[in-house]
Amino acid sequence: MTTAIYAPDTDRLQPKAAGHAVSVGALLSIIEWLSGDECHALDEAGLVSGLGRRLQALGLPVDRLTLHLMTLHPEFIGRTIAWAPGEPVEIHDREHGARVAISNTPLRKVMETREPLVVDTGESVHGRWQHIDVFADRGLMQLVIAPLCNVDGPVSAAVFGTRRPGGFTASERQVIERILPALRNTSELRILRQVELSLLDTYIGPLTASRILAGRIRRDEIESMEAALLLCDLRGFTELSNRLPGSTVLGLLNAYFDRIVPAITREGGEVLKFMGDAVLAFFPGYDAVHSCGAALASARAILEEIDHFQYEGIGVKAGIALHYGEVSYGNVGSGRRLDFTLIGGDVNLVSRIQTACSELGEALLMSEPFREEAGAGDVVSVGAHRLKGFADPVELFTIVR
Image 1: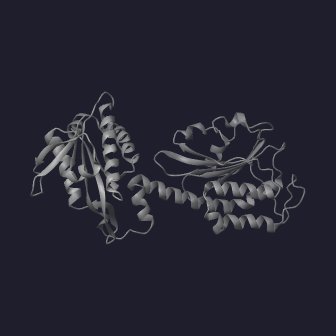
Image 2: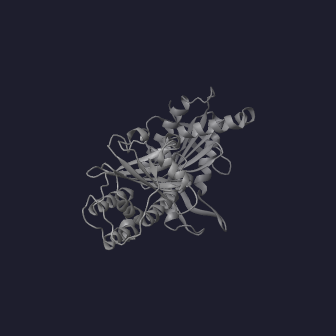
Image 3: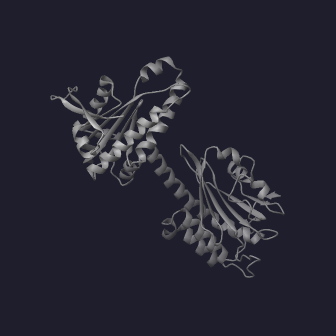
């Protein structure tokens, strides 16, 4: 049976399992906790476990408490945080395909209608929630499902589950309803924070995101830093773009970047930007030897990935340039439209080295400063070469493969 939450208007709430009335003061203490600084400083696990324990202290038979927070993320549709007495808090990031898995459940109905429900099967709810692992095999007899929606957009939800036969009483459901506005507000803050972080991380990278969130957003806030630079460019991309349908080119690029980017981030590098078919990444030079070693390890991994890369029968080749030097890191742009980027002569040099990869037929080239710091034993010189914009020839090196 599925019914709407009923909320009688009374100043004394009587959870039957507790055998005593819940005072308005006790209820307000939970609401104040949800609205206060202590709660706002907690992570999602602390929020759910703290709320679950407080509801139990009021006498509510809460055996499962879950938050289903919807978000904006290229990989995940949302996050589920699940608490049960005496157990570690579970956190599950849901991929976009999970929307299909919950499509026929009461949880999905609440998210679509924005109306609360009480789901009472009279027996274990396992059969109705076979795709939602946080409810399975727990002997839950009733679920109170409440939407958490303060703004337009994806609707989140909270679920309060009990094993008690007959489920929650009307008075217990009223206690739950009374705390929902405060729970909605604190959940909304976490959703906005998560969206803010995930979108910034996705589009500009975690290091740059942290600087922006710290308030470093003005054009004159430029930092000089040493860094290992990696520029990887897909060869023959113009020919591929002219020959293949746009959808195929886009699919190939995404599959290609799926191989390239993890090889960079695994070693501590940050992708600064995608430039068509090219990737510019940097490894901050807090320790030059470590930064260059990490960048070289990334380059080796990229070459290995490219050797085995196929997309719909199409193989690709790439050129990788490596350099170590000083860059200016910060905001560049005009007025209200800015870009957080790297500029400087060393950025120009790594770009010219990348061009030389194609001209010399090398898959990887590095500068002398990079070679000195990386200290690899399988590096050989390919001679000094004139690079556009640089007066003196630049000696370049490659690795023996």
